Length: 442
Image 1 (tube, helix red, strand yellow):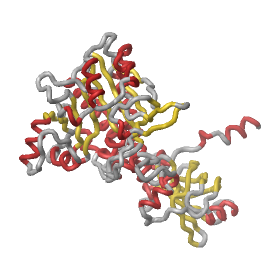
Image 2 (cartoon, rainbow, N blue to C red):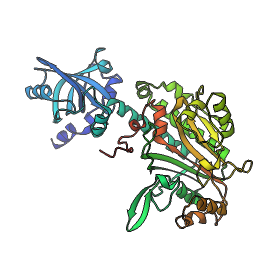
Image 3 (cartoon, helix red, strand yellow):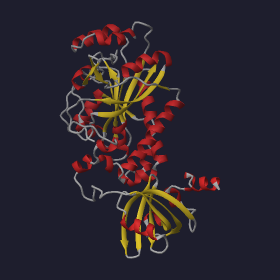
Image 4 (cartoon, helix red, strand yellow):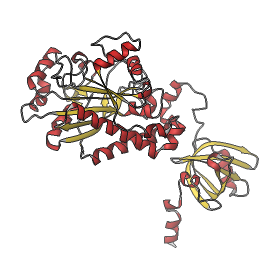
């Protein structure tokens, strides 16, 4: 008897809604659990749309077909109440997903108050209730695609003999520039939230050769654009014995694996978000490579007033990829607009051996990468020139004193890539809880 009771309440008796929608359960009994997505009642019938992580299905709860308490519970339950129900699955083209469940039992597990989000709400209201809006169908689909993108990235790294490592996010030094650092007190000392794991990846690379890390990065940029976050997820790689051209090859193969992986794993979610999965499946190497010099020429030819030495902005990036179906590399930028750690271009000392990868359709830069400078004195001179104290960088300079080798690396903004893949207008919808210049709640 005890065994029967245990079996009756084992979680395995429940199925996901997606399994019902895939077919094979017609005229069979099943049990589901989830949350009320929509509900309406008409006399002796309640039409309750239930959602779980895999989909939505309409549950018809008829008076007399379920215990009276179950019917009253279904009638009174509000949107977002958690429920479990069981019944017969029938095909019905009028129902969401083409199937409905005719309930034989319906239990409200956790009742809900009046849900504060209705059909038409301001963006600010939705951001204030982000902890509840994250349940929306659109954000759920984006998070599924994001999971596929990350899984595909890790698989590519593992397949190509990279090791995943765990660098710190509290640091004593700047990687990308002091003006965009978040400062904090660290047991009486000054420290910062990391802008990039790069410097630490360079240190770990000397033992493992090819490493990657997925960490949060923080930029105190006072930007109010559709492509900036104060906190974002940074996928970074570092490779020993690799130059800038090979570094670009690694990047394009990785990006290809990430976006084609998402297209294969989540085609329906992508379609619902407005992205044709077939477009992503075409994102295979090689990607076009454009020198900075030729980028300047292309911009001028297309009517943009842009001079050598200027940095690319949103408009310039959009113009450069017009007519391109795949991402485009722009490489060998002027030194003045790039970071101190990049290697000088021996063929043109005005520039660094570096590259940015621009997404098509005007979504902008998704990767920044470079070959790293191996001359310690040049690094010292650059740090002094930009007014940075040398003490916090002594450990980094040591890397050039003990067996330095040619090496390269890159940083990929996960949310920027996802914004392109999911065709999102604003980057804030590619992360569960966006942190921007004017938002730290919830």
